[in-house]
Length: 296
Image 1 (spheres, rainbow, N blue to C red):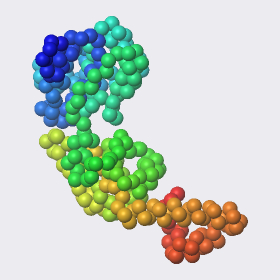
Image 2 (image 1 turned 90 degrees about the vertical axis):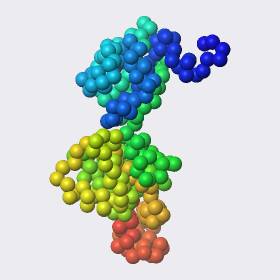
Image 3 (image 1 turned 120 degrees about the horizontal axis):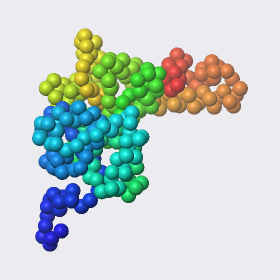
Image 4 (image 1 turned 180 degrees about the vertical axis):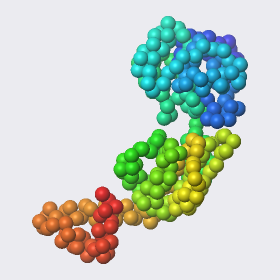
């Protein structure tokens, strides 16, 4: 690099510096949501590893990119990762893309990335679109503290267990969800987290039919129930617990812990011990029982 060259100039020549794995963010819907740097990398690299070559070809054709492609997806990533690392060790410049968004975010990529790092191959992120970030900033929910957890569990029992774990969360929770399961997921949110919990469903973000459903959980569920079918890519955002939610979680934990303590110390059965706990914390036995069930 010559004295006085800018960082931009140095970046422009980065692909000439040898082998590297480039993690290229691609549009999540609108084909214009791609950076100039990403387009240059895709044009100048030696090989593009695609989650679905047919899907990626639409983007490449749109921008006149003729770089050779190869498949890299969840069903072949174990063997294909090793093959790609061999290419990288021979000096190839490889770009990794998924069908949409950033590689590795609920998409294939981690195995190849970690293997490349172990073999001391430079890994270069090329930032781009991300569905959960786009949904988060437009949701209207606090974005100063949040947690992204990928897809909610498909099975109801596991999904409810996940929701119970965030009942008292002080941060916005972000998930992906399949359109055919979103009604069931919101029903579980109403039952586990409460009908008043703030909720946002971001559907088809950046696409023609982009839509945001914002409101309390019961309001969002009512909107979903009025529809015959729900289609598209969905991001589900759950607002942080309000003060009343946090108090409920604390009370539930107190009931459970005190119940176990009394049963152990006084050799009482659950029914008798629960009566004592209810008296201690100043609630009815039925309310203490409900709090105990919430904590399980």
